[in-house]
Image 1: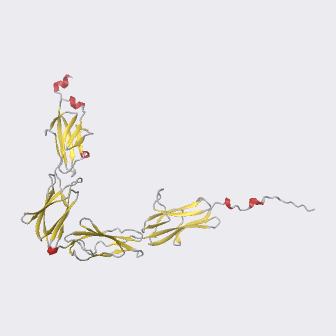
Image 2: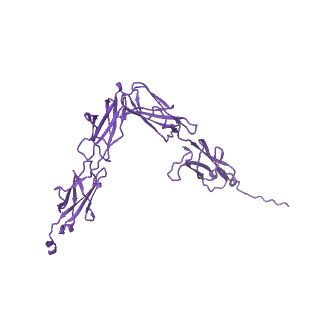
Image 3: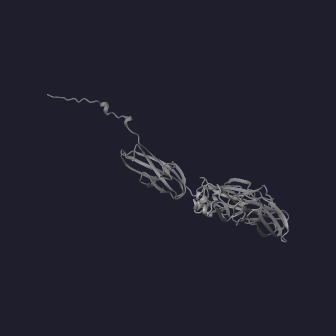
Length: 416
């Protein structure tokens, strides 16, 4: 007898269910910092030696079973970590790939594009016209030439050329794919012109150096000119300056007044060659000392003087309204604090009663108002010192001590 056993099963339970499988994928990014807020990108342009952070995301988790994972650069081994810090020193365009081989042997990957480029360089010593060249013809074309270089010998490089006159007006502002420029429009005579060049490569990387130079145009009939800049030792405020030009016999030839500026430019032209002197001062009563500067002009020369700095070496004036050192006690004490080298802010004033620092004082039109509520001083029969210290904008310091006249006499104090 033959017995047959038949097992009954639900064969549908063993069919492959596509919806029950989780998708695995990887993502690679590059950053320049491990900070949470740092920018993460699929491509970047960097300089040789820059530190780069290579990061990986494995979904659903880095803990899933795998056979191996690694990084390559241009097909060559690069690293064997999920995330790491490394630099790329070889200039060029590189492909950096993260490769993940799962437990079943399937290969997943993601690729980054990294361009390594050195910024261009510019020669700041050899160029045409040379720095401070005199006697450039004002009525003919002016040629400019310079040297720029791509250290990698791989990229296109460009020049940003700017030409300005002595009033900072921009005459030319252009991008060039060659290292020369010709200005054809003509220039004004006896003037200073400045020009600059900055180099860029095709990735907008800027040269570390900037070529900055100047030149001077000639004048008709062999005429010359003088120019300069005036400022003060004061870190604040603006002033009008007076410039007197004297001949070699110290007779005044010309006088001019500048606009009210922190740094004021001036120029005097036309002049003949010869010996001169200028006297520069602030065009008002002030603490600034005038400067007297002799100079000589050659034929067709534009002489630019070094910056003229007028110095204030006089400290602020501190006094009482009655110009006495002894003052009466009052609810508000008054002092005069004035300086002819510019306004003094209250932050530059300090007041001490004996060893106590006094606050809440105000300065208005050179008058210092100091609230005073020291009961001990009111009841004292002795003179009490109060000291005012002030600094002006040129850091000159003055210290003045006054004495508060007592309201009480010795018998009155002891009778209490």
